[in-house]
Length: 632
Image (cartoon, rainbow, N blue to C red):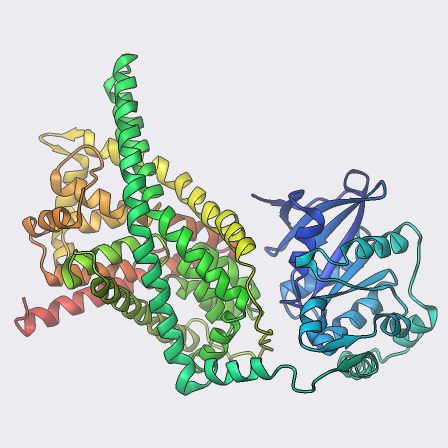
């Protein structure tokens, strides 16, 4: 839960800022020190989330505030502005600056900037274990002497050096140890001109780094360079990226089938018991139908459909993130986004959208340019989220692959699903270019893209983090919006106007327009009612075809396919349903997130209309061409 951040020293202890570049293990330091005593809030007036946690040391309480990762404090982005404002605020009594021991020179620039703003600084040289493996030796005592502030070496993942870090922090906060006055005077004497000051700090960082670092082997990052030659070259980088996409989808498809079926059967059994209990206590039929046939059936469908693939997809995604591969994806796609007039960082927010488009929208905070951030927000829906994957997988399997569970069929499904996703990526490029030449004109900004060292992922922590921070978070959000949707659907299916339910009446009304799109009224109605959560589109569709007043659960894909064929489905209907699944409005959760990020009704509507118009035009064009060439 995100809430407005309020820090009160008396309640939380000594408030300490935790700063650092991205990918230095800052959040690991924060998590190890604070454990579960954390919550997330926003700096007043900003959308940038910052985490706050409490740690106790020798009877003193410290409130650590995990600031967003930044390369500088030049206020070029909300993240940099938030970090600078907090470090300079009266609330912060000291700052811990976390550095990467394997990239010390680059990190020291931020250290020196922070030291210009505060004389109570502790430098944490993290990832010292990785530095040792690469034969990098840092003279901590000499670095401390040169900087004039406490310096501590840590390996936060192994909990190494964190006690020493708290001792140093205590010395600075409680013992009132301040920066060496000579260093303070030297930093204060630098130019007031921002450009000259930045250059001076970079030069000084280089000279400090050269004095304290010894290398066993000058070619210590040879392995990383070899991997980058494979993963970031145009000839090999893009094919490998596509192959990895197929592999991830194959694992997700293969792994999700059995647990999804098991969950569906479990919820079906529970539903039977709930119905028996309702009859036992003589619950009114309308109440039983609303709660069990409506709310419960929708929630159980969302959980059984969403949970297994997310529990597989998110950990794999996080493992690639921990390994250091996602920045390489951004590097590979940077030139394409630049040609589209957008920002290369959009590649990262696009990747986040695979799990949840709302998360992808939130991720656009890493884009500094307001114009390019809006482009990323409007186009994020062109990559299918986790809620749309079940629709795509089911229809691809039934109409284009075959429902028999074989290795060949699962690979075909994965390749076709990857092809649909790649189509969405190309659409992202095209719409981004269209926006940058029309309503969001501007010159693409430049940015520094760090390619962090490759690291061995911490499998255990990745699984825990992805399950709790991503899977359950997204699932809960979907359930919150799906529960009232289930009630609305039940009401529409049970209130009659003449001899038709409201649901059937609306379906018949929109059927002519849906036919122009190669769909039918039932399919389009399912997408409309699926606004709260894409996961309920298929159950609503089945309910409409069977004219049932409750959500229907089919026992096999063959049974579902026969139902669709009986209601006039052809390969063209299946193809257009796939296209409209890819190109249609964002779910209500994503729309709410867009409004929260943009604070604009206008851009929320633009984000709704752009993919919707795209979906209508593409499906109509596909239908027209299919009939023109007598393909149906």
